[in-house]
Image 1: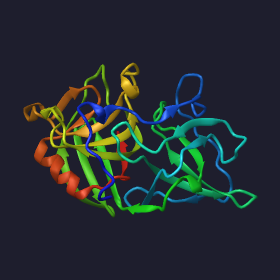
Image 2: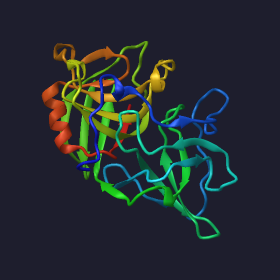
Image 3: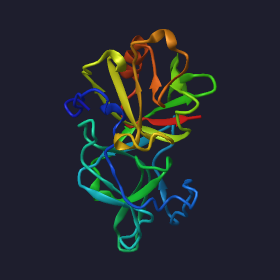
Length: 250
C-alpha cells in the first residue's frame, strides 16, 4: 500500500523477521504435518480466485490450534527485517465457543509450510488479491495469474542443486527497492519461504524474488535459493503483482 513500504539496505531481502519459538507444526524429521482444524472453519484464501491478507497490527503469538492453551509456534512482529510492515496471508477463520474470532495464517518460519492461529484482533482489515504467482523449478519459469488468466510469464534463475529453491506454498511478504548494489536489480519481493540448507545465514536464509546484474545467466540454476528475473521483467511483475499474493513453488 502507498506509504507503507520502506526501501531496504543491500542483502536484507533475504533476512527474516519473525522470531521462531518451538516448531510445533513439525514432526521429528522436521517435516510439516497437517493439523486437524475445527468444525465450522471458514476458508478465506483460494489462490487464483480470491485471497486475503492483513497487516499485523499487534504483536501476537501464533499457536498450534485456536486456543490460548495451545502451544505457541511463532511470534508475529510489526516489521520485517527489511523495515516493511509485517503482513500475514490469512487462510481460514474460526470462532470459538466464547465468541472469539481466530485466524490461521502462513508463518515465515522453518519448516516451510508452517501455519499458526492468531486472534483476529492482532490483524488489521483484510485486503483482497486475485493474483497467484507460480514458480516452476523444472521449467525455470514464473507465471502470474489473475482470476485464472495468465497475465505475466518469464524465464527465471533458481537455486543451485546444493542451495535449492524450496518447494511449497508461500506468499509475497514485502516489496523493497533502492539497493546500494546492482546485484538485486531495481526491485525485490520478500517471501515467507526459507532456504532448506542456509540455516546459518542471518534470519535463517529467507527467499526473495529480485532482479539481477547478470541477465545472461537466466534461465538456469544460478542462485543461493532466491528467484532471479531480468530487470525489465521484474519491473513488469511489480506493476501487476501486489503484496499478499499467494506463491506456489514446484
